Amino acid sequence: MKPATDQTGQVAMIVAAVAKAYELEPDQILSDRKEGVIGSARSLCYWLTREVTPEHIPLSDIARAFNRDRTSLIAGIKKTELRRQEPAFADLTNQLLRLVQATGRAA
Image 1: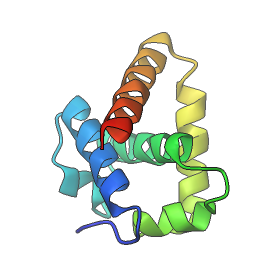
Image 2: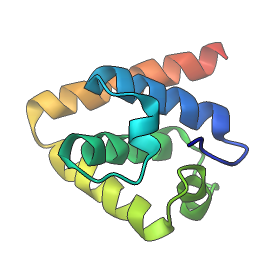
Image 3: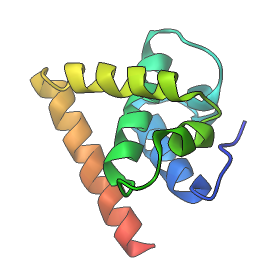
Image 4: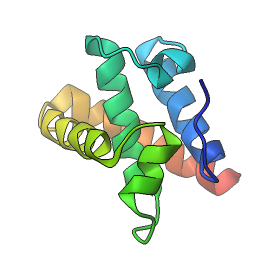
């Protein structure tokens, strides 16, 4: 399954980076499966995409890029923000955010 919208390249890059960090395949993150690590990785993708997307882009557009609805996206972002209180997870998210931002600037 591939993300759909004009943000496909950015979303694909984020999904690939998170998949590598979680030792998953990108298709697993984009699947409908909700098991622990897959759901956590997907939520992190939502959060990263929101962080690097201009504020004028509606959340519904980002959700569509993941073939999800807006409420799923919001729930995933909130879940990630709560987990960022854990130092190890905060380090992971910060590292991935820097990677995504650097890759985005290089593109």
